[in-house]
Image 1 (cartoon, helix red, strand yellow):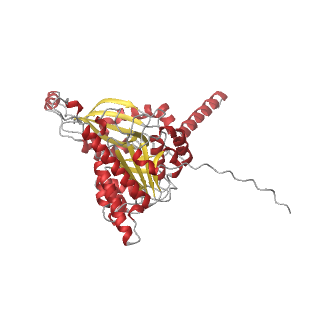
Image 2 (cartoon, one colour):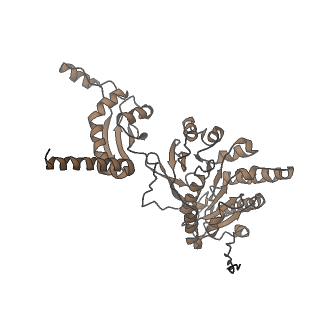
Image 3 (cartoon, one colour):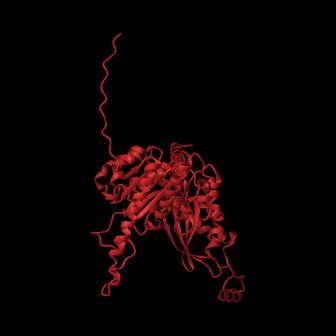
Length: 450
């Protein structure tokens, strides 16, 4: 074998090794460099055969039957037509025109067969408009190593917090889903999700209110950006009373600004604070409750009365807070009816649902049971070595797997300190404004003499 042949073989082996390394260690680079072309050729070559094997074809139209009969041929079955293909960072997006008699559920039921046929990591189907649907092919596990886009959308009360399994960005939109329940066992990534949310809200003109009955160990590092913070159940009860009083004042402001006189224009009438002029519009308030079970626990008969009052105030905020721009983010390791009176009523007000890895199926059912039983099964199947992975209920009515990027405690605290000047002043919450302690000087010890 000549030296040139050996050099060519060595080059091919080196290229193959490089491609293999990219596919394993840098799947995004591999996909954008080589994978999309290979997958597109495979898809176009096998499209009709795969559609037939997956049962996604229909009887041919009458015109095709007549043409085939005139040519003395057997009419081919009709297949959904590809109306467009787009390459993304995570895979391919196909736009299909489905056949008469087909529906989205047919393709959703065949998604697993499509995934294996085209050798993809995942297949997600959603309807676009009548007669058309979108098939999103995921080339690799985007949740194994979460890489958020460099340019994230910046909008008030809308925070990108995670990446979905279909490669899309998952955002916490308080305007679309005012209140949310976040559950997860210890080391499941629930705290990281909460840090990412606070980090995203810190640069916005939003009042952050914390209730952390674990003596503030979770939320105390963010005190520079908090407008109020409660450490104990007693302080939490007083803070909830102040929030309900603030909500009542906002409703009175809305009523006074409705201008219900005969000469008022229809555009000036509003039923929430977002319809008020900006100069009198109160600042939005996001209430973050860490470990909500601590508010339900009681040790005596006197504690039961306090518990019932706090839960009532929370339910009242959940029912009426949206129009007053007061939003709830309820977090806990578990959440069930056994917590006590009012737990189910509070859960009914929390439209957003996020379930990280849980220790029992009952918690997953409490969070996702009214969305989908498949979502409950997916939540209980989250492995322990994938912290930050969760199952979330979507505003569209479905569910999806997400994973939030890792945000350390010092990173979130640094962002809160950097935007300390944006902390709004809410007079009703002044009594609960946390005081930032000044670090004391540690006296230097004289060296010990022997």
